Image 1: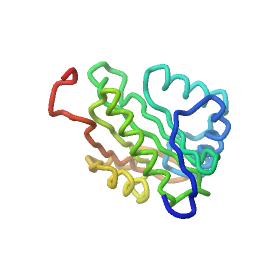
Image 2: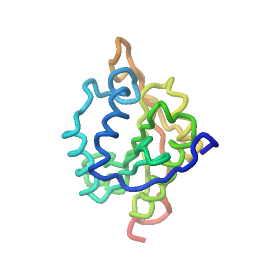
Image 3: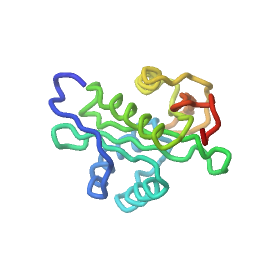
Image 4: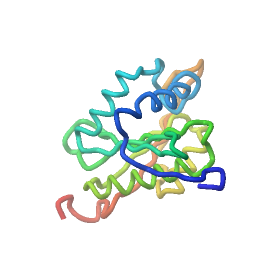
Length: 180
């Protein structure tokens, strides 16, 4: 966080945050390739997603900057099959007006910490677009390693878009059995 951000706090998302979360996500859907969604979800759908994540015991966090929700991050199941139950996938979005203030890093660090405390062992980042240097650098800064690129797996905004896969261990990672 730099001097342009006087107060930053990370907390659990609440239903009252949904309209702001929708505002942050909408431009990413309409004009970005960080997400492969093509139609921005409305408040009802985003409220359902928040409730779903929280009901499964996973963290959904917001970053407040001077009392305004400036970004959000959450963990979700990496895959539905039971063998993947100790692996989560992260998602992070920061309002463009608050970019480059350390908010993404604060959110990702908090998300990593929350997931480790809840017993998860691996976190996967599926980053839309191999040209998404900011997200790739953020994840690398927070201990993720690039484990692969899936070239041209999405068609959005008139072009093929890659997915970059990054991974980091949480807590003991694969060093011990999950129940240890």
